[in-house]
Amino acid sequence: MSTKWLSASVFLLLCLPAACTTTPHMSVAATQDTLEVTSVDRATFAAFFQKVDAAWNAHDPAAMAASNWDDAISINYVGALSPDQTTAITGLAALHKTFYSASVVKNEIELIRKITPDAVIVVTRIELTGDARRPGFVFHGRGTNLLTRRNGEWRVAAFQNTQLADGVN
Image 1 (cartoon, one colour):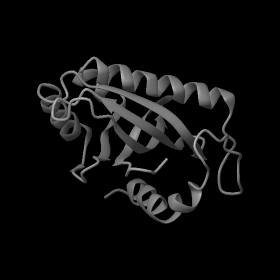
Image 2 (cartoon, rainbow, N blue to C red):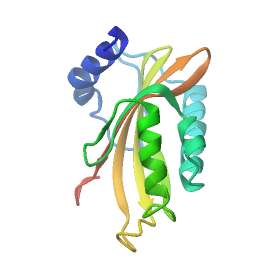
Image 3 (cartoon, rainbow, N blue to C red):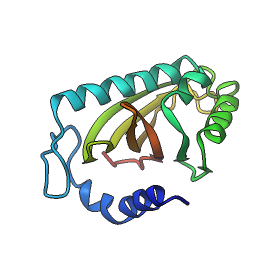
């Protein structure tokens, strides 16, 4: 494991629970340990997640892959680990040919935490409909996304998706 991934993993495990104590839709002010999130940042990440949603809703694996770095790590809501973007997208492509073939996803940004000028944590509220296994069911989840900027481009470096229990906002 590279040093950058080890550092990011340690940060997420140790610091994220304390950092995410805001309520949904609350603007996030800078603290001693984070940098200011600007209106340009908010617009950039809103546009980023609109592209993520559009790729999912078009059921386009290549477009889904474009939002992730090749070495992106993801953990889905049942805990399955994909150690790289290729593994994650291969799995999603198979699902989109079956029970997710008519699914629609929407991500809404709840929190942005800028760690460095080139690394942010973006927490999204996820709503998924159209899962053929559960007609009429609305999946509510939360995604923790570590985005990094390389050569001026933002992409997902790490992602974890958690299904919300009933009653959790």
